[in-house]
Image 1 (cartoon, rainbow, N blue to C red):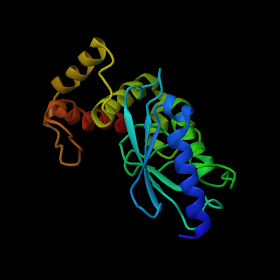
Image 2 (cartoon, helix red, strand yellow; image 1 turned 45 degrees about the horizontal axis):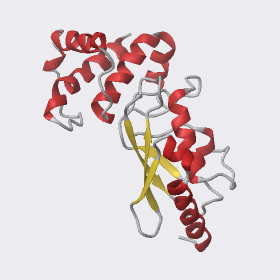
Image 3 (cartoon, rainbow, N blue to C red; image 1 turned 135 degrees about the vertical axis):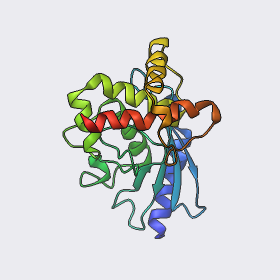
Image 4 (cartoon, helix red, strand yellow; image 1 turned 180 degrees about the horizontal axis):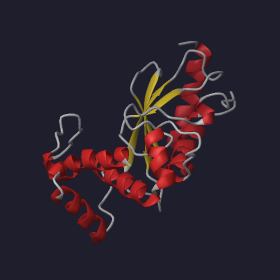
Amino acid sequence: MANIAVQRIKREFKEVLKSEETSKNQIKVDLVDENFTELRGEIAGPPDTPYEGGRYQLEIKIPETYPFNPPKVRFITKIWHPNISSVTGAICLDILKDQWAAAMTLRTVLLSLQALLAAAEPDDPQDAVVANQYKQNPEMFKQTARLWAHVYAGAPVSSPEYTKKIENLCAMGFDRVSTNNLNIFSKGRANLCVCIQGVISIIRIY
């Protein structure tokens, strides 16, 4: 990596670690590569959103041309959001594309991504299926996003009513759906995980 990029990202890395704002917003960053070419970020799901209580891991790759070109960022943790691919974790955010400026920093990126979770842009989607559901059936969107937040990001179950809805989905037979492609992180969440494919099937049909 070019010397200017290394010096810049080292400074920005320390800035995030010391920032009261990022600490208050439960934003973290760690080194993956000692050469500072790859970082691992973590953001908390914002309050009053379906993602509240979840912890979202980010892959951050720093190009040699940084800071003149943006870092390459994607969600490692699966998330149901119009501007984030539910399959690859790719992100549609202007500052990670053509609106990037060299004055922007790693801290800017992490705070912007957290803000994106609270303010989706369904008219400029990364995931067309999620965006369509967001606009056409917002209640189903919230339920699905909360389910994914619980299963993949460790968010707590939000209410007894929500739990009942999940149990109803399982009772409809979704527990018979194959879970080969699901990331089941603990046996305790297995029954919820197997419901996800059923939820997605409903979404794609309608």
